[in-house]
Length: 245
Image 1 (tube, one colour):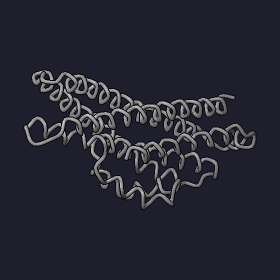
Image 2 (cartoon, helix red, strand yellow; image 1 turned 180 degrees about the horizontal axis):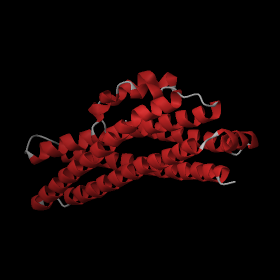
Image 3 (cartoon, rainbow, N blue to C red; image 1 turned 30 degrees about the vertical axis):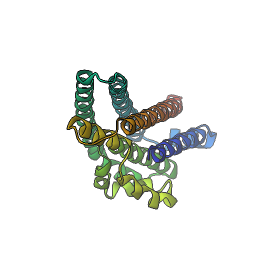
Image 4 (tube, rainbow, N blue to C red; image 1 turned 90 degrees about the vertical axis):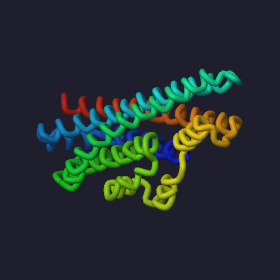
C-alpha cells in the first residue's frame, strides 16, 4: 500500500522540478519581478515554509515510528523474553499515540490554511502566480494524504473536497486513491501487536513479516519526503533570487 504514497511523493518531486525549471526562465522571472506585489511575494515564500514545516513533521513522525519498530523487532528476536516484548510493545503503542497527536495538530494547521489556498489559487492576478499557488495546493494535499496514511488511514475520507485539488495533478488515479482506505502497513502492525499482547492467536512469524514490511515502508517514505524537502528548498531559493534582484 505504501507504494501509492511513494508514487505520490515521486510525483511531487517531479512537480517541484518542473516548477523550478519554470522559475529559471527569464520570461517567468520578469513577470514575477514586475507583477508580484509584496503581499504575493510574502505569500509565495510563506507557502514554501508551510510545505517544509509539514515535511519536517512527517519526517519526525516517520523517524519516531522507525525507532519503535526497531525496538519491537529486537524484542521479538529474543524468543522467550516476554517481559522485553511487553515493554517494547507498550513503547511502540505509546509512540504511536504521540505520533497521532502530533499529526492531528499538523492536520488542524493544514485545515486552517486550506481555504486561503483555494481562494489564492482562484485569484487570477496573473497566470504565473496562479500556477505557483496551484502547485502549492497540490503539494499540500498530497502531504496531507501522507499524514493520514501514517496516523489514520481510514480518516482519509475526512479530506472531502480538499482531495479534489490533488486530482489536478493525476486525474487518472482517482480510482486508485479510493484503495487507500483499506488496511495499510501501520494498521497491520498495530492490529497484530494488540492481538499478541492480548494472547489471542497470532503468528509471530507473520508479525515479523508485517514489521519488516512496515520498516521498508517507513524507509521508503523517509527518503521520498527528504528528497521532496530538498527540492522545495531549491524552489524557495529560486524565488528568493528572483525577488531580491
